Length: 400
Ligand code: NDP
Image (cartoon, rainbow, N blue to C red; front, side, top):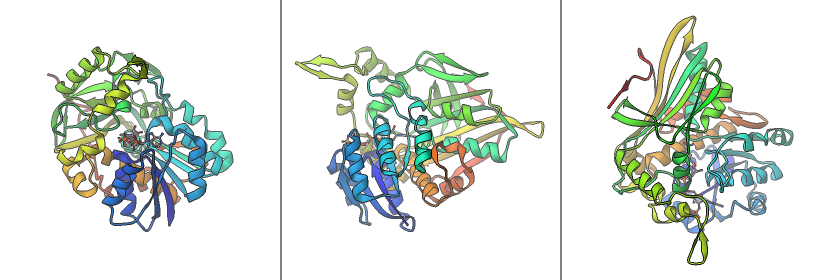
């Protein structure tokens, strides 16, 4: 029986609240706090179970500290934006409360994300006797757990990992992002990067693609991108020689993105507009559809997973682990689309791991540092069933 404070009432926050509410034997009390109280009220009204709501500006450490002191949670689940990671971690440190998030910190004025800022909290969390679990979404999150599972059950050494993320859904809008537009567009417009033979290799943004035939979906063009779990998996997976990340985008999406970039709408530096400073990307976010509103008309599926190649007892082995999720089914269950769902469910499962002591530690941790089995078991129980299949060919690609 535990009390959780969930910060962030967006697309992912809504799913986390719904899923925690489904497990009252663990989440006996739920408090949802966010910058705009009406968004907490909207989620509160969707539930049959009662939860508390509160206003908080999580950019202000003192507001988060005051809220934690008032509601005394066992765990803070941060599903606001990566910009708030450090202020919320700092507040957890000051109040001695455990912390979990789904995306790593990035500074607002620079499109750069890396774990250093959060890993730097390790010693302070350790000496305070508390735990932070980083990246408990799907990717990062479930993909890290899939890697730990492959390492534990299938390989002596994993030599290659390719994380492949496909959203083959259709929301009916000309252009929309599936999670926070500001964070999503910053992520996909930066340079690509992968790790090979001990070195990072950079590529121009979305300049490398392959065609992969996703189970239950079919062939989709997938673009090489940098993604944060590469940084921690390189550290924690034995024998790794190469790791890459791929995500699907339709040609129409890429066209819109190019136009927006070419006209300057994805800039993150302020420009003067009618005597006021505005950040073009933040303005773009204000006019794009809210990711939390996409679910109602969304159809189609996602398929996110990992390919592994390595050795067991001197024999070469290849493995594909993935989950398929249906947008409309997610909406029926928790009034959200599958991208929010596949992020929010692992956040709730990560919280269960911490609150039941299945995963325990003092300091700051990534998902692959713990036993994957109880997490994988919970994925099957809570709406994200997975398939682990040994395959004859590693990442078979079709070319267009
Ligand atoms: P949304 O934009 O839908 O929601 C973010 C919420 O955080 C909003 O309700 C927003 O409030 C709130 N918020 C923003 N700033 C503050 C603040 N200073 N104080 C308090 N609340 C604040 O985003 P998503 O739900 O789509 O994404 C949430 C997180 O999940 C992001 O960090 C994203 O990167 C991560 N994510 C992780 C994935 C994974 O697989 N690991 C995949 C997808 C997303 P307001 O309504 O006032 O704007």
